[in-house]
Length: 293
Image (cartoon, rainbow, N blue to C red; front, side):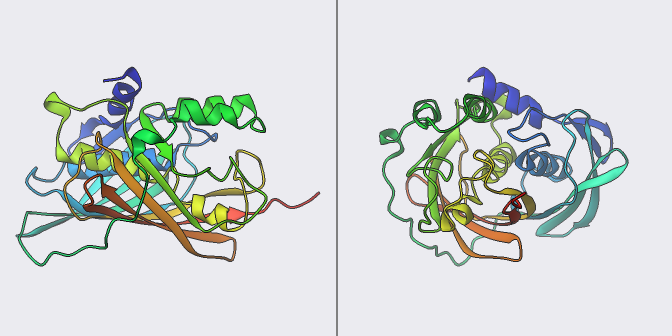
């Protein structure tokens, strides 16, 4: 296991300070605020630690309320909404400086057999044929080296490989509003930490990294890395359909059906390498074009 992955696992290992209260810390992000995927993943960890292990998470719905301060801890308070015969529901509020910065509702379900179908996996190249971030990012001479370093440092726990150029790699001309990336953790999980909840939380963490790329592609924008938009996540929803491992290759197929009113919508499907639809993700974000002085 890489040191970067171990640091990420430590980040998700929250400190329990009361029965339903947990405390987490932050790590440096690409932008000067707490990375949204981190808050969502930590909130799901807090919720999951109040639920029996035989009830895995099947969905989450969340709102980003205020930018997080990476310099102070985040306190997560869990409300045990319901413990039913099949389903368990939890609500989590993340607080900093006495104010809520994030709100999550998550549902967990004991295993049941039932109807089964899925959308087919789209065509995508083998991840082994794609460049790593360390190989790809230095190729973009127009990017500030400091920006490249931030990208590499913030994502070093995850092996994330774009199928095509990311928005900041080739911009100025609209492209199809669709993006694909393969990802897995930068190392295998094992031992006591190798539990289903952790894999779900790691996928939640990664799911916020690239989902709005497709919005930028539709308008030929490169994103914050080149300064032609400003934005932030507004809400985030995920449905966990089938078991998966975050340390094995997952295809994240993303598209944007709409952008309007200063907001852009991204939706994605995450597949295992053998074609199983594991997760569906939907997110809306603020995406604004900076005003010309």
